[in-house]
Image (cartoon, rainbow, N blue to C red; front, side, top):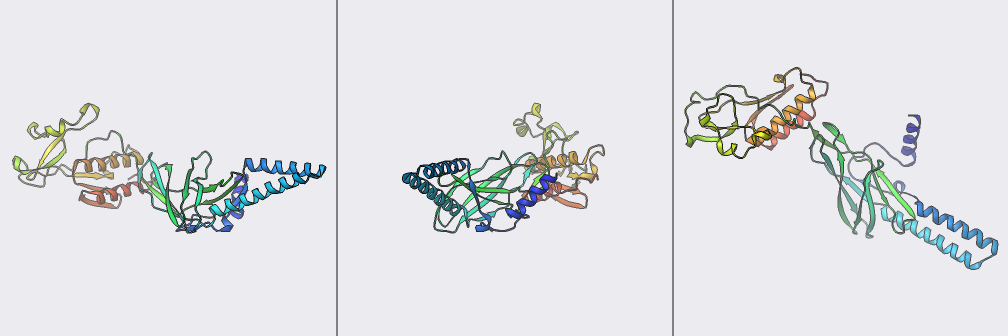
Length: 328
């Protein structure tokens, strides 16, 4: 732990690894670092041997070769530094995902200079992470997507990103790091085999039992007691009930049936919070697929029955940000 703290302190002081940085970031000279790569260290060793040999034997051609190769190293360092310096970095907002899915963090690399940038590698700074190579034309912008697994529901921030290049000869590595101030919203993973949609069992019309085919308004999940003539056989024919598909009944204008109510407080107390949220998430998606307006209740939130992307996203967001320690 002490070694990690010292290493973290040195990285903050030497490499300026600060807290998350909002907005655009410019890789100025102070933020770009260069060190020899493995081939570069071998090249330095060769230069040292050539210099010692030329000195011992007074070889003019040996000195010329040594100084020429040293000049190549200097030019390589200049071009490598120039290839990375003054890039402008900006992070976009990632789309929400369900727990267990991959998050796509969009990054934008802007080259305001007239010189092109070659073989720039962008990836997470953590070990064993795959980086992506890209070339950026003069005075243009390039978008790169970095993928990260979603760990748990809630906000998941991006980790530190490494931008590096070995251009042009691979003898030197120029690099910088960046921690963008962006985070992805992770919804709970839906329960795989949830119970049927919950209903309140009330009828909104006094003529619930009187309807005709001309009043057909849609379908809803089959409820025990629905007459056989009310089953939506065309929709059922497309459902594999053996694989977990559910029966559906026809819904008529004169028959509202029972309203779908997704209420956290009505779930069995024996279930833990995460399973309850997963079940509610599955019910929200199921109601949307079947086109059934649904009410949503979670803690102090009480959404009226509705349908559509806006209502769905509001419900899923509430589930994602619900406190983990809450039990009711």
